Image: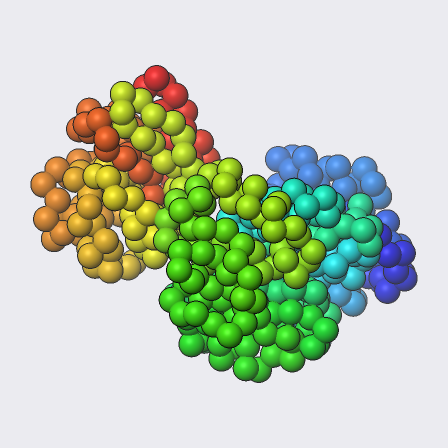
Length: 450
């Protein structure tokens, strides 16, 4: 960890706790800042706030009092989930107070180079693949960011011999200033988080920030099959490394004659890769490129790709019962992710779907339901998803209360050889705190069937 003096004796507000806020507040306190933490959860229900108070950090809990912004703060570190239209953030902008997210702090203290991964879909899988490939190559990687490990906690322990592989959301990238990964990846761009960003243009601009500080000494790995991604590349100063699942390229990562190829050199035959789904080829190509640029061995890459069967909650193979295979894809919180999951299977699928209603229809999902023999719906969107199923010609459509009840119902209507797939196409917040909780409930229900 770099012993920087940037924040010494500065008055800093950490807005919103959760893991990133707790870590950021503790780090800033260690770096000599005068830290105030503000969180909406009452102090009596807030063990994180109590722990920070014990460290000597000022804590304001239970609400976000706007008058707090008159206390002369020189910097705000906000929780990524707090939108910029929040009154506290608007007041900070009016006063000219810089607003950053915790990943900016991580970059400023990190001795290790960063590999940053962003995009609409596939971030977690790609981040994990790169980490595993570097680990198998004995490169001492560390994993951080939106994947669940707080970046500032990881960066404090990192040395120049490590590489931090970090998953980055558009929310986090909105709050960077100097952040500069040695290798950045933009996987793909689709409509997402428009309730936060307002328009797709603003969402794309947020994603593009991953490369804004890069120079020609850095690498930007981009999806050559998407014009919006390539437009970002055209404005980047980084060395561009394209990847494509459709075309043979002059350089970069691509598919040729059944092989994954990087810069003209064959790496692995596609038939030997165990990770299911055509959409995962994007993730694999970008991971191969980033790993080789970071010094990974081809043999280590092959070892990972012949054994890696997916990350938790993303097309995760749970097990088989009486010839039925169960897959947990709870992280599929939008239609595109569910389309990709369905495309991964040739066997008949019983699909479990539904969740938070964000006002959209599911007409886009209809063409992808051709291989679905039965549909089990739940949550706020149960009726909408069911309607899409009817229009797709699915004969068996069943509505249940939740994921736990969906599993035995799906099993009752299945036959040996069927795939029972949880891929909700919706966020979980109508019934579950997180998509991880929803996925865990699915796994537990499958184990109960056993």
